[in-house]
Amino acid sequence: MIVVNTETVPGHVIVEVKGMVQGSTVRAKNVGRDIAASFKNMIGGELKGYTELLTESRREALSRMLAQASELGANAVINVRFATSAITAGAAEMLAYGTAVTVQPS
Image (cartoon, rainbow, N blue to C red):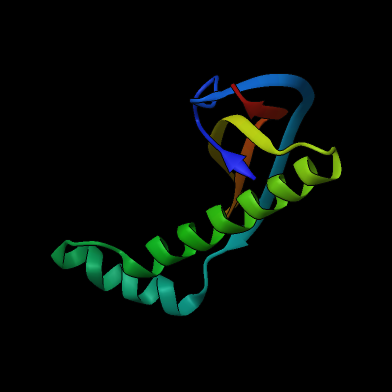
């Protein structure tokens, strides 16, 4: 599956638009990460626990989006974007979305 954040796939032509696809996951922070983040906030620096959480969330949302595109018979997803929103205190949604298409080499 080709995945791009552009409107076209270089060297390919879009032959069919299958529609919008999306995948999401809702993740919650855990106490261990919160404690480590509290200490890191005092001295500064990267919050690696949260970086890992966001990386896992993006992968999960992307995987679910690609599964939906595959079900539609697409071989590419264009205009891929990610969004996040707070669901409740301590939990957030990661959303991946784009347009499922069929492309062929030009």
